[in-house]
View 1 (cartoon, one colour):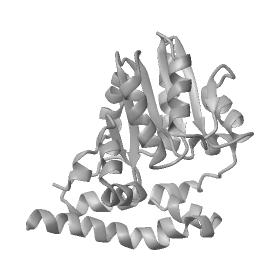
View 2 (cartoon, helix red, strand yellow):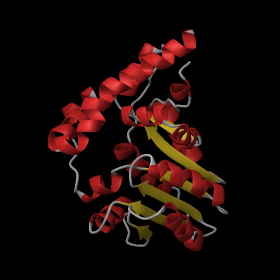
View 3 (cartoon, helix red, strand yellow):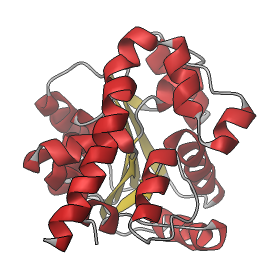
View 4 (cartoon, helix red, strand yellow):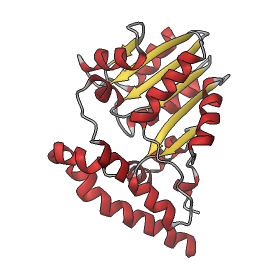
Length: 242
């Protein structure tokens, strides 16, 4: 089996409920991330990046590309699970559990950082740093402010930086912690980035909508990245045969 796809936590709506329960009741530091075609390409390009993604406790399938890669490898892709939908659901589940929490938001920049974090957490009581600092800054900040309650850390500075920080935070954590690699989640929550219409999301073409809005920034990720992704998937299957 493709080692990248093998690392996935594949879920359906039934199993997702039990996984949410397990995450909510963690008694240690755990990390959560998402595998899309861009992440697959990053993993394929670097052993260091691969190690950080493989260190995630939960790596969910995100997007049409990885669905097709699963089917090509005779794997049931099950449900699509992107961070924009999953993370607010997880936060709501945590609030329903009535757990005492210490909240952290690391990523993007002001004013979107505070707008997005306040919207996501439904409170202004959280610790935050923008997404453009050195890795050590987040580690030192989190070590200073984490508590014995459940610490919830949302990393929203993009791949592969957030996965590196997730690995390091988990290593240094002295308390219960849920570390979430959220990409543009704070920008989405702040309204800085628009969600694709429902029809695009249902068909798995949210990436196409985003590309239409930001063609220059996303040219390399999609126009170059999508053919590279399928080439990487093919090479992975060829290596297994050989």
